[in-house]
Image (cartoon, rainbow, N blue to C red; front, side):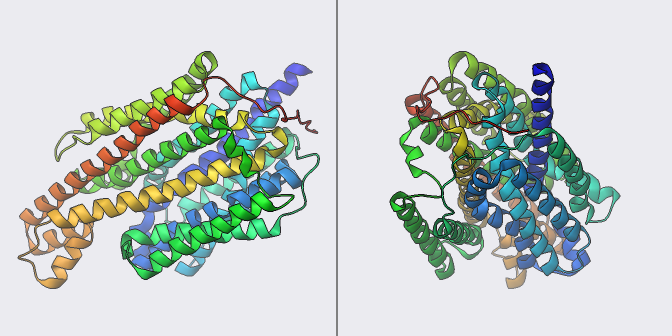
Length: 506
């Protein structure tokens, strides 16, 4: 009987892993489909940007509230609801005939993702004893980590063989499989004595995060000094400050912010945020390099990210094994050092460096990411009372999403500004020069249309130069993160004395 229950838990974890894999590749799968969607639906750049950003915006904005709901109303119930919402929204997006409907469906997918992501990790704290938890977390970390770079590969293959809606329709059978598996395999769990619903805290956190992430999303295109960007960032920060004050003063808060007093929770969360910052920074610049500088198509570009995925698959279980022997500090610090080293080597990439060179440093970054992220997440979960694992996990997952949005905004601005400064367009007519300055794709299109190979060469050189600066900046942040983890992340698990053992009901 014990062996049967143990097998059942691992099968339930596999179902959760499938769910987070789908969430991961949906963050990036849209990118390769944008040109096709623009043509089929006759939409402009603004609408395309919102098709991508609606998902991330809602995902980041709702995770805190959804994690707390899982603790209160039951994690299995919320996971099933999240899967159902995600599947319905995916089907709507697949058959949408207008940009507005695609954007609305992507936002609804974000709602499903906001329910699933924190609660999937929270369930691990309830299902698995501490000696098994590291291995279980590495499964989910691999699912989410592999899903992000897998998005362009899946999207590229589907676009070569089917219509653009297939990038959404692929979610439906995966959701159906997840619904059946979770319904039969996952036991229900919840906080046995939940606090009263904190409506004010939920509203403040959601509004604050949505407005803040909106400002970060708009910053690269509008500029950091734009009144709308400044207003959104200021309003978001103010709302979140009010939220923090409310949570610290109310008798029954939605989330317990005093968790940040625990070094294990604080530095585990920070390490996870900074690893995500590095991964998304890399995925922001490298696919464009492969596609626009080296000339690979969308599917070929996705395939050439496989070394990153391979590194993640190897790194996550390696980090878990090292954490079991030497605790959290060693694998997190070592993983971040590998990320920093890989990115630093990547900064030496030039036009014509060759794919072998790129594949090598991508594999190192993937290895370090997997090695650091799994123990960092385990450190967070081990610091949480099991009955509050949903809300506690939601904090760190929300921080990772906000950190990822900040990384893309800052690094995107850095890339755009440096690219423009080094591009030789002084001899071009006004409209052509403006199109070339907009991005490297525009410059290559102008060069082909006007027969200007020198412009294409200038655009590729300018892009690679700024990509090097982006990767150097990200490497420096990863190196600083490694030092901070080595200094402050507890070497051994430190569990709160008030962490009760929660019972789950099958």
